[in-house]
Length: 237
Image (tube, rainbow, N blue to C red; front, side, top):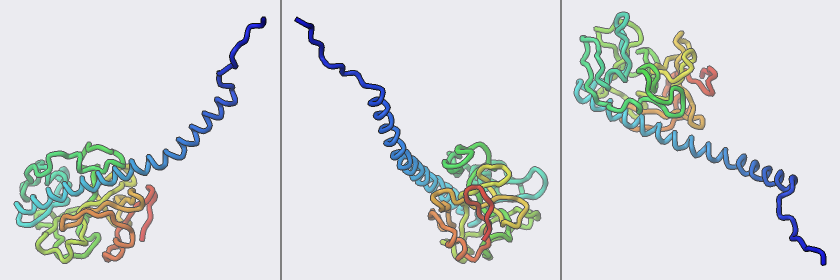
């Protein structure tokens, strides 16, 4: 009597390739959705970061006669950004130094773009750093102790439209290839721009404390010829 053997249950090469192809297709279908979900989560984190910065700004203003310090420059070596003020770093003696209103400096940086984590007060969310830039408003001024360009202070109690005046926004520096504390006009030699990185929107902190993703048309209706950057390519209105 001949010995009977069961049928061979191993995969053939063709069957294995079919399984691999199916898995590859499924992964390719799922990855965009996963990436979109991941970016959505980062966008929410970004908004929360700016919200905490806004609270620190308001606390600073409460202790400094309703003034928010965004940037200052007097002489070489005296340059300070908004982070230096609300984090209590040493500031020029001619203007009040901040207290540590913002303990966690990681919230000064958008998690979506380089450098991803806080490394310096230069590579953070950006503010308009020229008094003449952006939205005209009598609340924007430079104290007499600061005579150089790049100095910007905001008197919150004199803002005409605090719901439309932005303090911080997603930024990109064309030379540094990273986030930048400065946002200036496209005509400026300093290449700092708004950066529409969150599905063509810029997360923006406004002077009344609210944070909102903002599109290009909204910035236009503010009456400002503000420079912006999309996909790291310079564009102007």
